[in-house]
Length: 606
Ligand code: BDP
Image (cartoon, rainbow, N blue to C red; front, top):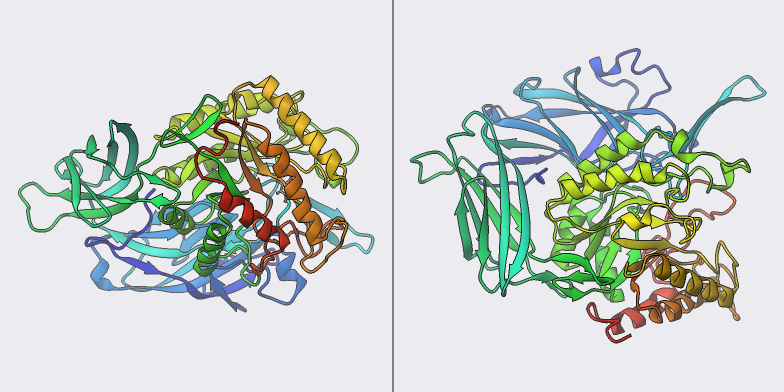
């Protein structure tokens, strides 16, 4: 799926701003609120989460439906073009209506969707209505426990408790745009690269739609960073050779531009459609226990993150994205994971540009019914009770369709902390892994971040993956406060993985400790800044001594909001930065370490 771009043949209109908004007490659909202008509405920004934008608990703890509406004025001169309405992301289910007519429904809160509106729209004023439902359950990604229970006073309590550790922000989270294309247009561009003796071979496949599809000529041009043509070809597929190619990698994020044009036969002055895709040439492979980027052993230094910030919650904010990636570079980090869902397309474009490597994760989190404290003592059968397979497949398809050309994406994370030790896990994941390998034109490596019950002795899935990714909390949830025990347990587990799956690289995809900024103690105790720093330091000693470890991602980049519970103090405090992005002691420790670790060849000779 192409990112909406303004080109010589396309226009983009941003529909951000203040929309009308109303919480739905339950009757909105039955009363067909979409058929007339929204009554009793309040102003609400788009894009943003709505949860923190009202002082009533009803906003914050809301479960169910809300309505958004705005006027959409379409200039008459656009008629004759394809008019497409595109949503960057709506959490979690969106029903879109135009002038009271159903337009599109989309399930899944982190990937874009779009619909052509040419048939329903009219020149001038239109009414755009979006019904958003934030309900999650055992069939959705992420997974939550939806419950309705009677209270002694005769009322009903509806709760939707996340089976994951971040706040279930909701709303129209990413930009809504109206864009145009000509009637015959470029629908998709697929790019791949291989290297041959210093040259780059860029494979392309172009999907064209529309009545003139069979007759147009497709021209593909690769431009270097100065805008000079370095290779060109014709046709819907082919391969271009870039002589003495500049490779994309951290420290050298060189981007070419792939310009695609449709030309009518005989026409030489104006092309029918054009699009420009930034493209970094690089290769990725897992070989001999190493993660190879451009053939060189890469060491991941970085963090798991969240899209999370005060006031707008999970809403799109390019200032925060720029700040975060700048802080990552300040730390000397070279990578991050999009824990626990796909991030905004704009973040991916920035990462390409800044040379940050990304592990791209689908929103498959909470696929374990025996992990959370609310799970209770009785052992549940996760893979019998959950019905997420269809949604998981859709999320994977949509993520790969969206991010397949990004140089920054070097690996797909198929899930975070699923019950891979339970019966049924292998049958659940095998087809998904097969699908991911089929869908990705660049055949990137696959991983799953494993929770602590998935050990070398119990896990049933990881032999199918390319990289073992471990989320480990020794010294925190297990033997809290005891760093010598944490080191011994981590060391033993790494050795056990090496024995079970020799030659498979290991990434520490999460490790960390909560620290309340400003809380100090010596000797370090849990929740102090000193303890967080000491725990990271203790892990680093073990990781450095283990050649199979190809990287370290601290949990988490910044403090983030969660649901209310007795283990969270206004959220999860494992950030090395506060929620406002101020550094804790640990950030300085990591900065010292990571600036001394090279991106490539760190473990050479170890
Ligand atoms: C891991 C999860 C992550 C949590 C973290 C924690 O992957 O989402 O926030 O633990 O407990 O299990 O801090």
